[in-house]
Length: 176
Ligand SMILES: [Zn+2]
Image 1 (cartoon, rainbow, N blue to C red):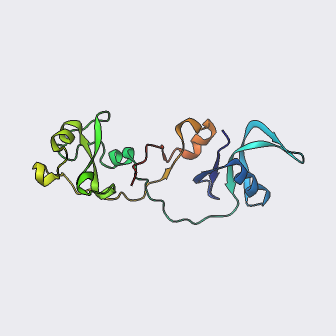
Image 2: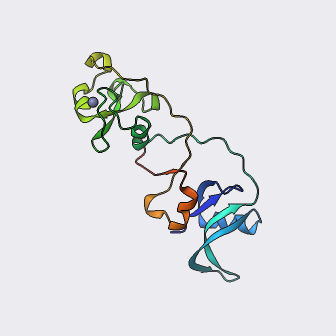
Image 3: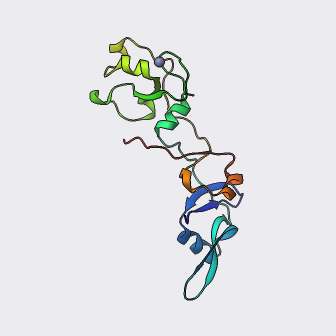
């Protein structure tokens, strides 16, 4: 595991980068080390501890990140409420294509909703109109929320205090 968490000048978590890129930023004087790992790395000319967290030494303005379109994020947007019958549940919820894929429905925020298995089965390969089912609200792309994607098994404990504001997850991506 050689991923490095990159903080902005303000200590806000920005992204995860490779160890090579992090070392380049440090040697270019653009970033400082906030936390090292126990492991050291050695080349012919230098020996150093592997960085785990670095912080940029200048402020990076960046556009607000969009929320990744994943199954989990669709369920989170809809708060695990079936958008047809209003049933709530964390375990058994599915993601439904409002206009089915087979009828040309795209995999977009506007065409994906949380649905319970019963409604999903009942609706089957039909549009809501054809199935005589109504959406409780119009699905939209969610607004920005602080979001950083980290693989679950690559989250060192020292990162947590910089990520507490974030929904940390990486989930199965929906192929578009
Ligand atoms: Zn339902």
